[in-house]
Length: 99
Image (cartoon, rainbow, N blue to C red; front, side):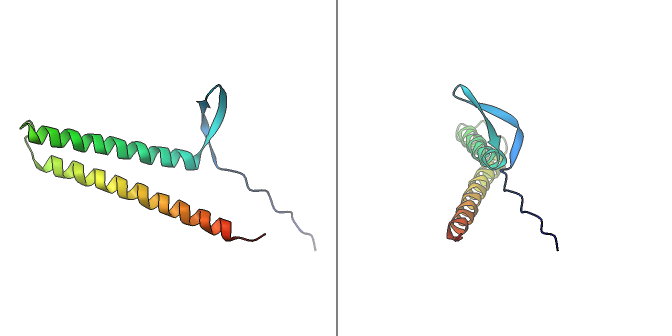
Protein backbone atom coordinates (compact mmCIF):
# COMPACT_ATOMS: atom_id res chain seq x y z
CA UNK A 1 0.00 0.00 0.00
CA UNK A 2 1.42 3.35 -1.08
CA UNK A 3 0.84 6.52 0.95
CA UNK A 4 0.76 9.99 -0.50
CA UNK A 5 2.16 12.85 1.51
CA UNK A 6 -0.11 15.71 2.51
CA UNK A 7 0.54 18.91 0.59
CA UNK A 8 1.35 21.94 2.78
CA UNK A 9 -1.30 24.62 3.21
CA UNK A 10 -0.67 27.62 1.00
CA UNK A 11 -2.36 31.02 1.48
CA UNK A 12 -4.87 32.21 -1.09
CA UNK A 13 -3.41 35.06 -3.10
CA UNK A 14 -4.60 37.24 -5.94
CA UNK A 15 -2.53 38.28 -8.93
CA UNK A 16 -2.41 41.93 -7.90
CA UNK A 17 0.28 43.22 -5.59
CA UNK A 18 0.30 46.44 -3.61
CA UNK A 19 3.18 48.50 -2.28
CA UNK A 20 3.63 48.47 1.46
CA UNK A 21 6.25 51.07 2.24
CA UNK A 22 9.15 50.44 -0.11
CA UNK A 23 8.80 46.67 -0.41
CA UNK A 24 6.13 44.88 -2.44
CA UNK A 25 3.76 42.47 -0.68
CA UNK A 26 1.14 40.31 -2.34
CA UNK A 27 -2.33 40.98 -1.07
CA UNK A 28 -4.34 38.01 0.05
CA UNK A 29 -7.85 37.20 -1.06
CA UNK A 30 -9.00 37.42 2.55
CA UNK A 31 -7.59 40.91 2.92
CA UNK A 32 -9.06 42.02 -0.39
CA UNK A 33 -12.53 40.87 0.65
CA UNK A 34 -12.43 42.80 3.91
CA UNK A 35 -10.92 45.85 2.21
CA UNK A 36 -13.73 45.85 -0.36
CA UNK A 37 -16.33 45.47 2.42
CA UNK A 38 -14.89 48.43 4.33
CA UNK A 39 -14.80 50.50 1.12
CA UNK A 40 -18.43 49.55 0.46
CA UNK A 41 -19.42 50.73 3.95
CA UNK A 42 -17.63 54.04 3.37
CA UNK A 43 -19.29 54.54 -0.03
CA UNK A 44 -22.81 53.71 1.12
CA UNK A 45 -22.45 55.88 4.22
CA UNK A 46 -21.29 58.81 2.08
CA UNK A 47 -24.25 58.25 -0.28
CA UNK A 48 -26.62 58.18 2.70
CA UNK A 49 -25.19 61.41 4.08
CA UNK A 50 -25.51 63.09 0.67
CA UNK A 51 -29.11 61.92 0.33
CA UNK A 52 -30.00 63.19 3.82
CA UNK A 53 -28.33 66.52 3.10
CA UNK A 54 -30.22 66.84 -0.19
CA UNK A 55 -33.46 65.92 1.59
CA UNK A 56 -32.87 68.48 4.34
CA UNK A 57 -32.08 71.26 1.87
CA UNK A 58 -35.02 70.45 -0.40
CA UNK A 59 -32.87 69.35 -3.34
CA UNK A 60 -34.14 65.77 -3.35
CA UNK A 61 -37.21 65.23 -5.53
CA UNK A 62 -37.94 61.70 -4.30
CA UNK A 63 -37.73 61.28 -0.49
CA UNK A 64 -37.66 57.50 -0.91
CA UNK A 65 -34.10 57.78 -2.24
CA UNK A 66 -32.92 58.85 1.23
CA UNK A 67 -34.61 55.82 2.76
CA UNK A 68 -33.09 53.51 0.15
CA UNK A 69 -29.61 54.97 0.74
CA UNK A 70 -30.02 54.52 4.51
CA UNK A 71 -31.08 50.91 4.06
CA UNK A 72 -28.13 50.20 1.77
CA UNK A 73 -25.74 51.69 4.32
CA UNK A 74 -27.32 49.66 7.12
CA UNK A 75 -27.06 46.44 5.12
CA UNK A 76 -23.42 47.05 4.17
CA UNK A 77 -22.49 47.59 7.83
CA UNK A 78 -24.44 44.48 8.82
CA UNK A 79 -22.62 42.41 6.19
CA UNK A 80 -19.24 43.69 7.37
CA UNK A 81 -20.06 42.83 10.99
CA UNK A 82 -21.27 39.36 10.04
CA UNK A 83 -18.13 38.68 8.01
CA UNK A 84 -15.98 39.86 10.92
CA UNK A 85 -17.86 37.58 13.31
CA UNK A 86 -17.45 34.59 11.00
CA UNK A 87 -13.72 35.32 10.65
CA UNK A 88 -13.34 35.51 14.43
CA UNK A 89 -15.28 32.26 14.85
CA UNK A 90 -13.02 30.55 12.32
CA UNK A 91 -9.93 31.91 14.07
CA UNK A 92 -11.10 30.69 17.46
CA UNK A 93 -11.83 27.24 15.99
CA UNK A 94 -8.32 27.12 14.56
CA UNK A 95 -6.86 28.10 17.91
CA UNK A 96 -8.72 25.22 19.61
CA UNK A 97 -7.06 22.65 17.38
CA UNK A 98 -4.40 20.80 19.31
CA UNK A 99 -1.47 19.46 17.39
